[in-house]
Each structure stands twice: as structure tokens, then as C-alpha cells.
Length: 323
Image 1 (tube, helix red, strand yellow):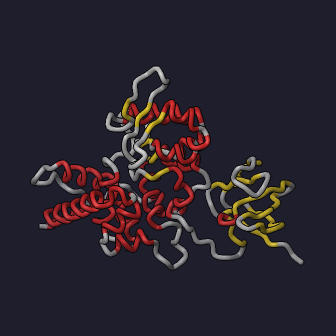
Image 2 (tube, rainbow, N blue to C red; image 1 turned 180 degrees about the horizontal axis):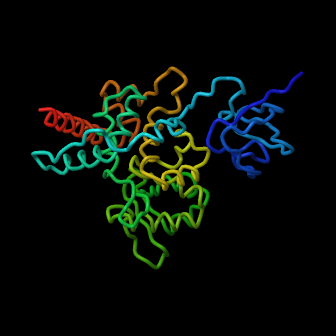
Image 3 (tube, rainbow, N blue to C red; image 1 turned 135 degrees about the vertical axis):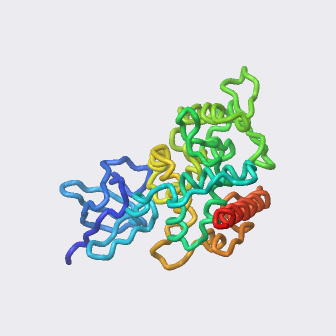
């Protein structure tokens, strides 16, 4: 019986020593690498590449000869090449509210990309820019050139702290009843506790680097990254095999960060014919549902009002431009 052949469908796929993400990486296979499928094991394939045998994650291998349609926006060439800025820029608004200034700066910087991405997901550009502005300051990097992040103590507890409670509680704290609140940190038990958030990026990066030295992967799981503030543990949802791949991609450019937002919304369903719940909510302008799914139930009402406000303000700016 003839063996199946396949081709790597993502930018980089790890060939591992066994069927699991905790198994050692033998090498990385670039997109288009042809391989022979020796055996299927649930979500894993045992394959051979030349004289090398190993295991790859099944989702990222296409059967040779089948139409290879990208599942993720990040893989589409037109999105990588489109101009970031729109063909027509927004002029300075008559009323210079901070919200209008942010909308103008974001649209003039990324409107061309946002228009194409909105078309791909069949949502309004006004909805897309509203979501982006609410989730970011319109910038993916701080003045020092570092990517904007937010370290979440309770997430680090979930992935690492539960197994190391004594060490965790020496350095990290959060409100157990409202785990997204009360995030504090100290380098040693001799120091006073300090808030992780609200003091700019210096404190966020300080805590992240401390956690990173403790456990690199789980520390990246515990940060939200770039303009869309997507959590690291969601890396597979945006087409990245590992959180490290997501981190490098988002550190590379704001373009990649924005595409990551739309990939998160689409949830890899571009080829399935079925829209994700997030995409459906935005299509219907159902901002409460979107906010609950994207930000969690804790602050859904606040985020919903913000998105609606930015949406209305952007539509008003566009009417002013046309008048």
C-alpha cells in the first residue's frame, strides 16, 4: 500500500522526537517542506523527511495535491504586502478629543491594512478600528522600542505557580476573589510589595523578565502582547505553533500584531465556511457579546461601552471627511 505524502502548510513547523509538544525539537521545517506520512497518532503524524524521522502536529500538514488555502490571515501574501496607510487620510478633527486623536492616528497609520482585514472577515472598518483602539493606545511599541505587554499574575499562577506555591507567593500576589485585580510583585521577601500595573511599561517588563528567568514559556503565556493585547497562551489560535513564535512575530512589527488580532477573531476558520463567534458578534455590532468573549466577563460591560463609543466617533469622523 502506498504511503501518504504531505506538505508543511505554516511558516515553520517543528519536527519533534515524539508525539507531544514537550518532546525535543529535531529541526524546524519551513513552509512547503514535503514529507512522507508513516503513521497517524491522534493529532500527531509520524513522518520522514529525507533520512530523518520524527513527529509533527497534524493540523499544520496538507495532503500534497489538495488545494492549499491558508487557514490564517498571517499566511496570506496580499495582507503582508498591502500598504499600512489608507489611500485617503483623516484630517485633524474639529473637536480634538483624545478619542478622536487616537482614531485619526490609528486610521492614518494602519487604515489600509484595516480595510483589507475587515473585508476578509466581512465586518465594517469602523468596527475594526474601534476594537483596535480600545485594546491598544494605537501603538504596539513603547518609546524604548520594546513591545507593549501586560503581565498577568493570576495566569502565571495557573501555569506555573500552582506547582511552586511557596516561591510564587514570595514574589507574586493577586486578589483571589477577583484574580484580574490586585497584582503586586517584589524581587525578594525583604522588599515592599509594588503594583505591577499602572506605572507604565517599566514595571510590566521588570516582572515579566523576572518570571521569564523562572520559566520562559509560561512567562510568555502570562503576558498580553502588542496592540491587540492577545495573551500568549492563545498563540495557536492565531496560527503560531509556539508562544515563542508568537512573541518573535509580534516583536517584529505592528503589522503582525494587527493581523494577529484579526486571526484571533477569525479563529482559524477562514477555510471552514463557518464564522467564529467573535466575527459574528462584530458583524452584528453585538459589542457586549464580543467584549465578553474577547476580554472575559469581568469587564465586559465597560469594554462594550468603549467599543461602541469609538465606533460612533469614527463614523462621525468619516462623515466630517465626506462633507
